[in-house]
Length: 351
Ligand code: NDP
Ligand code: ZN
Image (tube, rainbow, N blue to C red):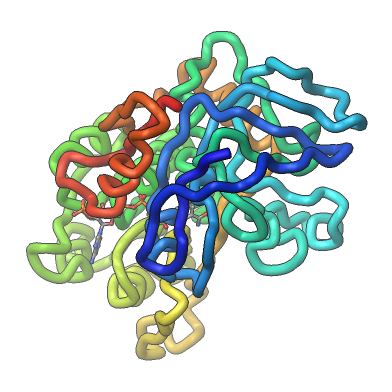
């Protein structure tokens, strides 16, 4: 079969592979729509270390093409949303720490790109289908379901980690799709004021629709100074980091009030160093909680998010800025994601 991926660092293109083999608990999916993610482009540039001959992509909806002999809940032909994180639920990481992201250790549950090929192919493999697939319910479009499998799950997770309380002042750094869903999550969880950091006009429009009350541009001086000025020198209760660099992260720590939470879902580069002066973190004694996490996986997570779409709490399709028709358009969509055109939020490809 044919797939699109990285031959090696900074070299993407078509890759020929054999169709994946379906184990007894597993499923093989024929994707109908996929979406490239910033994490795919980051990985293609070696941001997670060297990888070779790897099919990329981890956001897909599709049709079940084959099921293993022990799969009970799905049938060939079901239209499913596939979480981008698919834990091995038998692993001790899940059992001991209730961690859906790190089943065998750091990032263990991220099977696509981590331990096997991704979804940008004619077919892809899903481990433990009964626990990792969700049928797309009536009333939810495949496009909306596609936005739930990583963007909604990760962005909402940023808001969950930040433990948003009613009336919180929240800064969301980044208004790419992850930041947009963090804004929407923060608004749904009860934030008062939501200050968004980002500049792309189309994304700002969508951010306002999801609940951003105002905007700060990192291109017009220090975001720290701008945000402190807007909050009478107090800073926000919570900061969700979904963009920027290590300096941005350090500023996020400094601007957060004592007893606040810095919730990071941004992807740092393997070569980055996390470091800042101790007073940024109140000399270690300010009860500022720095958290960083990875998108939680599994069927139940996605089923809950699909319910939020079905019952009208959110419409994640506002993020879809570009649509490509046909498998052959994968390289074009990927390049668009990589270059980040000014009007880009999220491209999707109908396979
Ligand atoms: P985008 O690149 O689309 O968005 C990044 C945002 O950050 C943009 O709004 C951009 O502003 C803003 N930004 C860029 N530079 C700065 C800066 N110096 N200071 C402040 N803001 C800045 O990314 P995505 O939304 O697709 O993804 C965000 C991150 O989340 C990525 O690192 C991605 O890899 C990661 N991710 C993490 C996951 C997890 O599980 N933890 C899962 C999926 C993704 P502008 O509007 O000007 O472009
Ligand atoms: Zn992703």
